[in-house]
Amino acid sequence: MGRWEPGAGGRLRDAALALYLERGFEQTMVADIAERAGVTARTFFRYFADKREVLFDAAAELEEKALAALEAAPAMASPLDLVMAALETTTDIIGYDRELVRKRHAVIAANAELQERELIKLARKSAALADGLRRRGVGDTEAGLAAETASAVYRVAFQRWVDATEELDLRDALRETFAQLRTLAAPR
Amino acid sequence: MGRWEPGAGGRLRDAALALYLERGFEQTMVADIAERAGVTARTFFRYFADKREVLFDAAAELEEKALAALEAAPAMASPLDLVMAALETTTDIIGYDRELVRKRHAVIAANAELQERELIKLARKSAALADGLRRRGVGDTEAGLAAETASAVYRVAFQRWVDATEELDLRDALRETFAQLRTLAAPR
Image 1 (cartoon, rainbow over the protein chains, first blue to last red):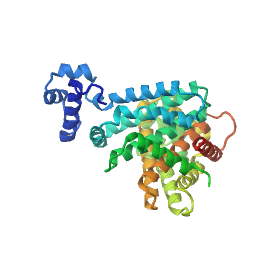
Image 2: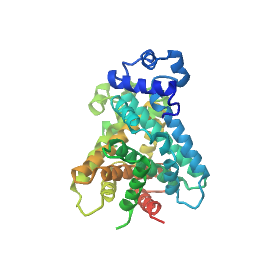
Image 3: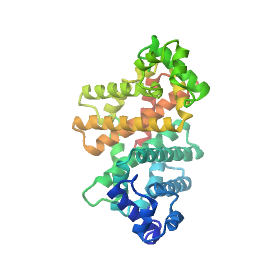
Image 4: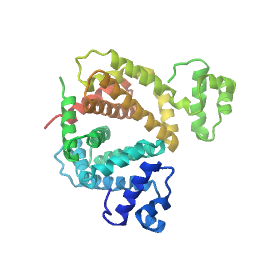
């Protein structure tokens, strides 16, 4: 999110989110978004494949960055630590603008089709991370478990960060939630 | 799955799964399923709301049972242990027939719409478990984290059980995967 800011891409994203919240996602047309951003529809399509991609284009960037980090990480860490560290490297892509992320969440929460797409993207990201671990020689079940657990921690931390009324850094939220998982999973 | 076995419901379920695998989900009509099971379409609709519900009706039963177990559990356990124990109580509903579950998985894997529905059902189940923990006084983030993590463990264990070529009890797969998570999450 925001990799084109502060150019036409950033203006288009802001315009789209504002319109989705004002009128609803279904009721907003690409022409409306372009008009609000002061550009042509043709310019819109230089940045986004369709009006849905305004909400989801950052997902591919996040996944790529996490996978690259996973690949480059030293072998000494446990598979769960590896995925957590990989996910942590992505926090600077979206963590800088909580207001933008909140708007995106509100738009998605209001539309069943967008929620489905979000779930699918998250599931695919988790599967891609598990495959990344398998390529590093981690066993099948352990890779799936580490990726799914790290994704769960990430989603919970992300939601906490979105909902928080206080100042909160996304990276700190992620670290705190991971520490909380360690406590929860400790044998007693 | 299988609560109506060995009556008309069980026969309808077997017939539906066989046809979905033979012809594809989209290409199978309720009339075909009823015919294969030797009953009328009217009988089909006494058991299932539509042809999709043949695949998903057990989900509600699983969720109810897990929530009831969560509510009835003693307070001493950690939130993660509570959800794991609640999920463990549901293994006898589906754990007795791996072949049936494998067929269901194969049908869902072949159809994008069914995969989305499966993801949504799993997400809702996790959210319901988190709410169950909150009703027991568990803090907001901790409840979400315990439910999401337990759901991740459950999904991975379930997949392992479905894929395993050896004899394997679903409950044992769940316990082993949970033990694996404890090891993965242990501080080092």
